[in-house]
Image 1: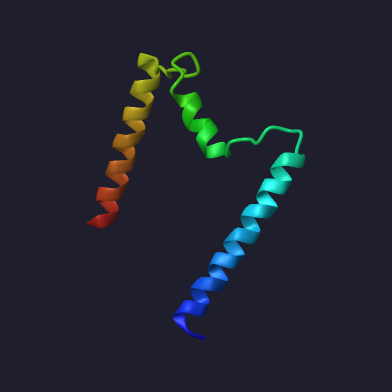
Image 2 (image 1 turned 180 degrees about the vertical axis):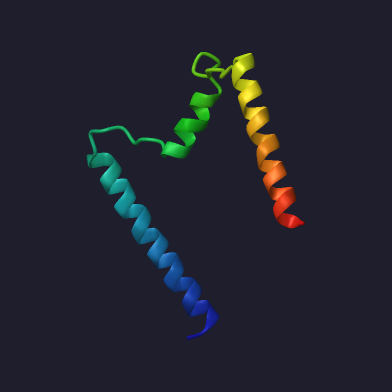
Length: 79
């Protein structure tokens, strides 16, 4: 198959798919939804939707101690 024939076949398929999409869009009564990834990115722009997470001083201390213990275990295992 030559390159020009492939291009013609692709163009024909594109035209067929565009017609099918137009037909489906005209028959559809429900609005076309945005993909979820786009909806999520729009929600993150809303400052009211964001919630900050705050650690208490006790929580920070527990995490710091756990990290120190983990580092000690890793250092002792490496020796």
